[in-house]
Image (cartoon, rainbow, N blue to C red):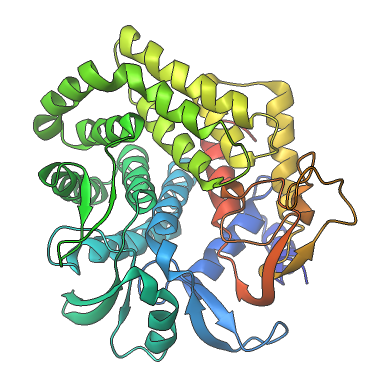
Length: 407
């Protein structure tokens, strides 16, 4: 089964209607519609679980633990879409997910960002709670509704949400959106600063710290300066003075192993994007460029459309890279929307137990939530074909690419 049944019918309808669409746009619009219909049951990104691989009956939701990060990425995707199309639908979509992300912060009652939330009366609550129990389950209220929410919040969730808020603030020239993005980003950063860059649960437990990540502290503070300079500019300048020269060191540590914990490279990409695009003096930019060059050398040949588009945004056009990016996105459309098991060990030479010697072709890669945060060398993995991915791994590089002239 290919991604999103009906894409070709949708394309035919749009063409017959006389609407001028760019390459890849009908597919992107169809994915956004599917997200709104099935992946935002409570305002943030969740992936539906079907009764069987060939069933259309949703029996539960999964991947709640990463709802915050992908909600932030989806917010960014719709913000880029709004910038290039001025679509009222894009504005409505991003407003919906923005409210969901706001609830992730409201529901905790302490200023903390939750991983995800699910109404106490949801028919899917027990299954989601069982899946996420190791992260800790709490209760709280937001918008007049009672929720279970998932703790053990990671640095990934903060980076993803603040990335989305930064893009929405920059790309959407609607005062209400900019005000809401600035307000939420301010509250999230205030919480981190008040807790000395530790992510503290309501029971006092610390789920993670940013202490060893100069690059991430600087990137998040740079977003703070973008949305609320009066509050954060002096703090950022102080941190910049002491930490800018350490940014490359943290990124270099990530590049020692270019296969394991591959999600670290997505965090590098979005944080360095914020550090470099939001402006700075030439001295500090030199340090950030050094960190980015270290990251880019490590992943340049990985066949990663998301990283390629960020490279275009930061470094401008490059014929070979941009042609590759367009091809990678076309190949992404050949992937199924669900997560059947993949085993490529008979098709690709191995240089480790679960590591191909060269990046695997996009259509053959393991099915997952966000393709570009998974190692392109993985030889096997997936599930039973019951979980449907949201498709943000197509939307974000597509609309971001449109914004930066890729198509």
